[in-house]
Image 1 (tube, protein in one colour):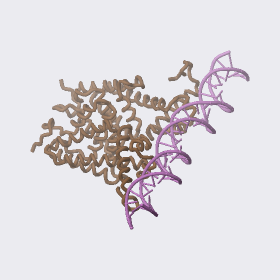
Image 2: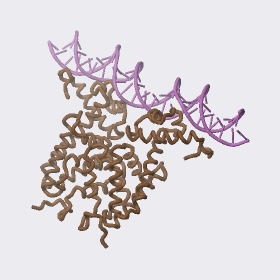
Image 3: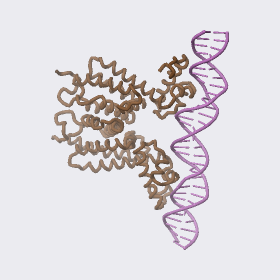
Image 4: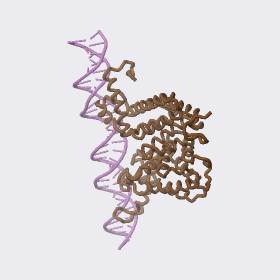
Length: 198
Length: 198
DNA sequence: TCGGATACGGAGCAGAAACTCCGATTGTAC
DNA sequence: GTACAATCGGAGTTTCTGCTCCGTATCCGA
C-alpha cells in the first residue's frame, strides 16, 4: 500500500496525502453514509479531487479501503480482548462496543454487512480477519459457558450487522441489544451472568 | 387516493395506470433497492415517465406509496393472525414470514426501518398501523407466556428490521432468526413451547 | 357522435457526481 | 543547486437521473 503499482516507493507528500484522504473519507462516510460525494471527501482532506482519484482510482476502491481499515481496527480490538480475564464479558463487551459505534457511524454497519458476504470477497483478507478474531472471542466465551455452543462466527457477524442496523435507525438500541444478548446465552440454569461452570 | 387533488374522480385509464405504476415500482424496488431509477419503473409498468410523475410528483412520494402499501399488507397479515388459536406461534410465524420476505425484497427492510423512525412520521398513519398490529400480536403472545413481558412494539419492530437486514445480506438467516427468537422468549421455566400457565 | 376536459408519452432541461487531463508545483537524486 | 520525474489541483467531460412541458391521444357526459 505504500508503493506504486510499478513497485517504486511513494514520494513523501503522496504518502501524506493518501493518509489524509483516507482519514477524511472515514469521517465523511461515517457521518453521511457511503453515498457522500468524492468531492466532499477531497474538501475535507484539503486536497484536490484529482489527488483523491490518483490514490483511489474509483470511488468503490476508496470505499473499500475505508471499510478494510474499519474492519481491521475492529479485528484488532477483538484480538486484544481475546486474552481478557472474563471471556463472557469480553465477548459481550465487544459486541456492545461495535453496536454503539454503528449507531453514529453508518459505515460500520455497511462494513459488517460486507464482511458477512462471505466466500466471494473481492476485499481479500480482511473479511476473514474479523471473522477469525470474532471467532476466537466467541469460542472462549462458549468454553466459559457464557454463550450458547450452537452458534458460529458467521451467525454472530450477521447478528452484529443486523443489530447495528437496528441501532442506527431506531432509538431503543439498548433494549434490542438486550434481546440479542439473551438470545446468545445458553438456555439452561446458569444463564444470567457469564459465569463458567465445570 | 382515487381522486385528483381537486376532488374529482380519476379517469378510468388514469386509475389503471396508477395501479400499474405502483405494482411495477414495488417489483423494481424490491429487486434493485430504492436507488433504482424512475425510468426503470416506467419501463416495467409500460407507461411513459411523464405518467409516473403525474401520479407521483416526486420519486420520494412514489417510494413512500410503495412502502405504505407494503406496510399495510404486513399490518393486514398481522391482524389476521391476531385471532389465531396459538398466540405464540402466530407471533413467531409472523416474524419469520416478514424476515423471509425481506431476504428477497430489499424494500421490506427499508419499510421496516422507516416504520421504526417513530414519532416524526411524514408518512402519517401507516407507521403506527403496523406497530399497532404487531403490538396486538405481541401482547397476546406475552399473555400466553410465549414472549418475555419486558419488550414493547418498538423494540420488536426494530429487531425485525435488524434481522431482516441481516437476512438480506448474510446467508444463514435461519440461525440468526433462532437467536432472536430465543432472545424474545421468557428466560425461566416454561420457556420452550408457547404454553400459557396461570 | 361530438366536444372539451383529462391523461399520455417522451424529448429535453438542469443538476449532480464520477472520473479525466494537463499545466503548475513539489520532492528528490545527483 | 539543478534537473527531472512524481505529484498536485481543479476545470472540464461524461453519464445518469429527477423532473418539466407540450403536442397528441383518450375518455366520457351530453
